Length: 85
Length: 244
Image (tube, rainbow over all chains, first blue to last red; front, side):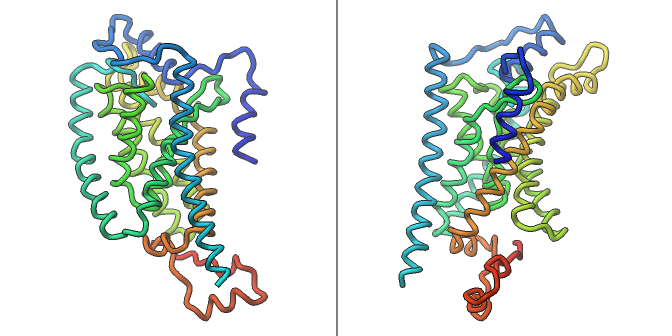
């Protein structure tokens, strides 16, 4: 409950902002502090669009969640079996 | 907390990589020890890694109007210790650097230091201290998750401040600026991470006793006490709270 509240509350409380990533904010701040700095290497590969990036992030979360769910499934089955005996 | 590819000067990138290497190597060694010593907890170890995967994929909005993500290293830290988290966290960071354009190969050392080394160390310390102060496992796990997450972002702010000192305020001035980007945004998210970590620990205590006992995370109550639990007393009473 508290988790959902803490996540949703900012969306309701703060308006007119885009909830941009803090990583990007830091990148902008580097530009502000040291305007002459140029990154000396760019990303090896960048997802072609925000949609594809979203897909890959979802994939990451799904793979993780699948394993976590599997683990608790195994544990649940085991404790049910113990109860039967 | 991902420092983007190429956004650390060469010297800093190399330096942080050099600093992280020994931790990584020690982590691999520890990982092998854990796998050998606790063969029944392999799936739990994989689950701790999966927990990092899930949490670090979730970008959550925060009150400052920007989004950031939890780290997920707190759970594995309290179960398996901080050193094991170095390779596990680095693995996730590598995945994100190569496939998601988050972080980078040159900044992998710095990012691994903040998320997979500094965060877990702080989490482990906080967990130890809270357990000494007789906090319950849930409370200790909450504090460890929260502080580990927050420490990660403070470390990133310090790394960036070192690389980009403010013209007027130097390192301190720059640290305040980067800190205001990361640390404040992260407060609610760190609390979320702490709550989720405590929730999972609670689930583990209910469903995964054998593994936790093997890891001496909890102690198995003696049989008489178990018998008592089947009686009128509440099950809570019998939940053992002796830490490692």
